[in-house]
Image: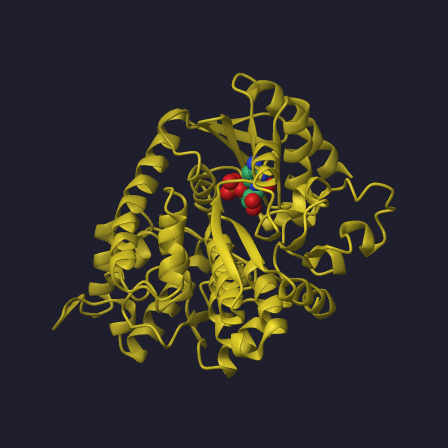
Length: 470
Ligand code: C5P
């Protein structure tokens, strides 16, 4: 990775003007910001563009601009064969396309890049881009190769990785991400603590933390506000303090220990294994230069704030917040966060309403026009994480989009170990019905023509069956 990052840095330094294209999710917004900051510090003129997805149409539009140099972040690898005639760099962690540079033989790294288009992707060097390095980490390695001064961007590197749930399986960031975390700590922009890993430690009243816990769901507490309040009262823990509702960060160390041991015990009693129960606590990544008690101080909350921007056509707002705007853009982001929370709640109600159906090897729901295409993947992940649907089948979700039907597919880590690769399933099933897609082994997406959902599901069902049997 370091050699590729250095090569990419050399390419970037030769550019006069760079068009940066990035994805709209937290990993995309942080990667784009890292690229943009690194370019700015070098004095290289650049323009930032956020894309919902990179498909053939977007590629044509980009080529029509005739850019002098490009830097793709968090997208590009899946369509590398279509981008190979451009000039610049790609820092991505999605599964690279199997169609290589014309004439190449796939086992050679040179088949995934050209002398003028440097492709930096952990998958190309045997690092798992789903769990060991995000796009923000990949972009960070290039930024660091450009200048040691960019080490402060490691904090955004960690926010992107957490946004892509790369800390989820083991309760901590692993693999090449450790290098990013280490740099962040050394440069004073990141602090790693061991704590409860639930969302909202810094901003939510503490009982809400339990009420909204979904990964894993807490027996008798998740989704039941009253039970959560009683839980704290029974433990003798005050819910209100001088400043109003107490948040997790307001609790005394002893109170926190009591809560965690109660929660672990109830999970064990419910039949969860020790490994699952242990996942409640783990590493939490803090940004010490941000104000405590705001959604910017905890990487997980920061990533959600960015989700609230990118998924509602406001990637630019998230980008400005990442660049340090604490005025107008930050205010706007907080407003978007409120709306995002509301839409998530509504989306989960819609799933309840339409119901989840099963085929032989997969399950699915269709949100129609009631779930936003950019949020249907988040909803699918939450429904799967809540344990209310089958855990031994991937979940496919549909929602109406402007240019077709959006598909999002999510699966548990367990299925990954059994050989499932949703990136391949979604890419190939989408192509067969006239759509386009790709992504990761446990989270993939596509857009397909309206009316082809049944055919898509039939093909995906067959492919998943074959993958899980193999
Ligand atoms: O959109 P969603 O959250 O479901 O995307 C899951 C993954 O699939 C993302 O990493 C995204 O980049 C990828 N994807 C893709 N092509 C699409 C849609 C999503 O490669 N058309």
